[in-house]
Image 1 (cartoon, rainbow, N blue to C red):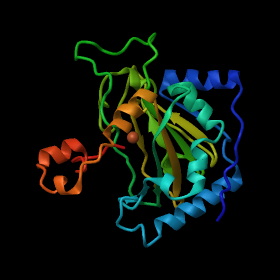
Image 2: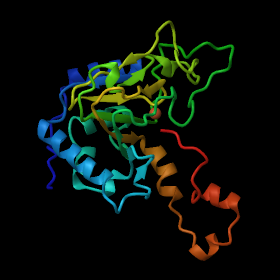
Image 3: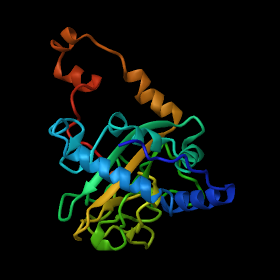
Image 4: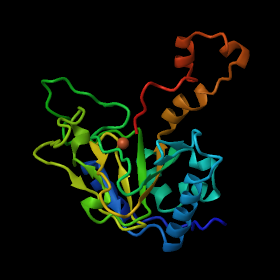
Length: 270
Ligand SMILES: [Fe+2]
């Protein structure tokens, strides 16, 4: 199948400002109607092909049967969508004009299948606070070192369809979610990011979030692209690509291998 990704147009300055205001305040922001019907059909078709490709089964590309990783390697349409407008313009507005790719995955939740339904922040709390400091000052605009653009490829219109849920403003908490089932920040509980196929939403990974279980008979498709500030991409990307000969690695200690990065971490955050 040939690439079906269109170039798109950036949002106006006014629209961009409105999206970013919501993103910085709430920790997420939905932007409706970005992808075309043809793009959605083509992407879902290709994603289904890849999930059932026998050459990918059991490889790094498919994790736990519902996450497709390293998609940039797999098809031109994934590479195209990384720089599709208005997505890339929003990414540049948030993490800088010289922002860099730091991840692209597909989450495909089959009816009744596995989801990332535990409340979490990604990786770690980047701006932690001590117990006696209740929150970050709301007048501060919290820094964003990397973030995720989630692209809905199916309609996710009710809780049964497994929307991403957020606790608005919780990126100001300086903490992990304060309850496994009913987290609440500043008097605000979880809300769902309902979408139609083709809508996107920007996600601050420090905002408490989860994927609600897919209790419907509809497969939930999310394509996600992640963008980082230039210094972080350099520090954690370019500088770590230092090849050590295989014969040296074969005799290296477990500790060296872990620090060098050839052993998977004990657990992986999403
Ligand atoms: Fe996450």
